[in-house]
Image 1: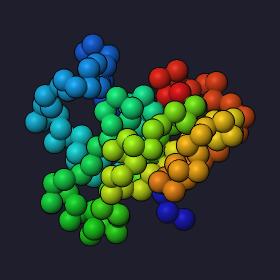
Image 2: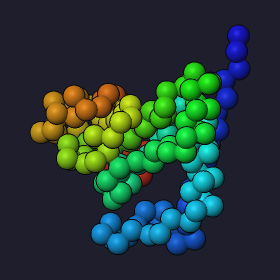
Image 3: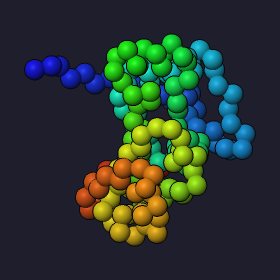
Length: 144
């Protein structure tokens, strides 16, 4: 039986906001920080992102470094990890750039959100929608 390894990489700025407050004026990325995050993401099979971050940023992090992409291929991994979004409300516009990025997407949401969202059918074509059941009460409000 092979061992399963889980690595948790958390990102947070001193002001507690990793996303730009004003999406029209995004923060300038720190080259060293970006390289570190890109390396960590390159090792992952899955990346978990809150819906609030996707709404604020429009898209998700993608590996661009050719050496890191080549290393993923050697390890038998897909070019990009699966991006998993948690959304208690399924309040994600089908027009978000995230939903057209060349990545595999899973969206975890509630049964109620799946039933109420006018975009469920469209989102099902763009991502794997995963029903978490009746409630997401334990999710942070920004994920809803």
